[in-house]
Amino acid sequence: MRDDPTFVEQVQRDLQDVRWLGPEEIRSRGRRRSRRRIVVAAVVLAVAGGSAVAVAAPRTSPPDVQPVASASPTRHEIPLDALLQPADLPQQVDVQLSESGLGEPVLLDRMLSYCRTSQGQPEGWQMSILSRSQTFVPKRAAPILTQSDGLVTQDLFRLAPETARHLFASLDDLVAPCAQWLSVGPILTAGGTRRGEALHRWSVVRRAFAGDDAAILRDSLTATRDLETGQPLADAPSPILLAVVRVGDTVSVLRLGYDGTEAELVQLAVVAAARMCAAANPQC
Figure 1 (cartoon, rainbow, N blue to C red):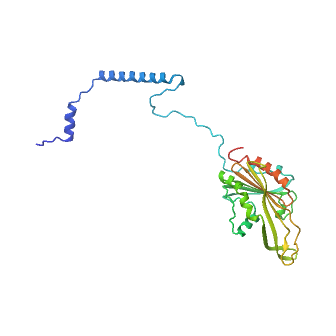
Figure 2 (cartoon, rainbow, N blue to C red):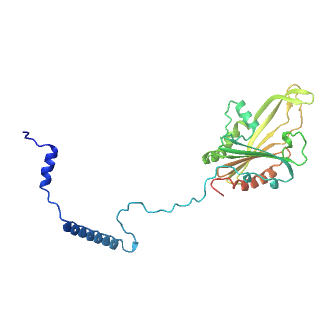
């Protein structure tokens, strides 16, 4: 015979010594515990006083909480009404060319880009998330269009908010290498291709006139000079002007035709900023 009891046998022996409560005693103890909980709850309410705060017994499910409505839902797409409209322009237009893109660089000016890269500098363009571009062509435009036929060109970008702000903070550094830049290259003339040069002077000439940020960039350039004869190949052109406007996380780049003035560009930028409210985060 074994001397050591098994685990099951030991449990059975221990249970023989347990005194089980009768039904009436179980109900009595339950009533006493309920009364104690009521007294504790009354004490908590008395301590809370006029604050109307009470501690309740745990619930099996959390109380319903009404979600706090967002003050302004985030917008992602760029709607068409965020762009300039034909009625915003000083003259009638016949043709409106448009396109959209993803992850496009915020290209301010191709000549400015070439100026930087020709000196070993990076282009310096910020990257967008979404973009829309459009060009308005005047009524009764020629069948074959050139760059000068465009009345207004607008590029509208959505950027990460910090990227949009950094674009304006870095404008002076962006144009600094091109403040005095001598461009040399082939020039197409009526008599054939000649080699010429012109001096470009890029600068930020105006700020804070529209939206959350705004600036006018200007390239004042001299007449192109023939490198062989030293004579000018044409009259000095009008300055190149472009406006950059920010509203929230959206940035618009505006260019006028060659005969556009700075005053006209500023006025158009103010109108563009008001239109951009339809797309900007946060809302205007």
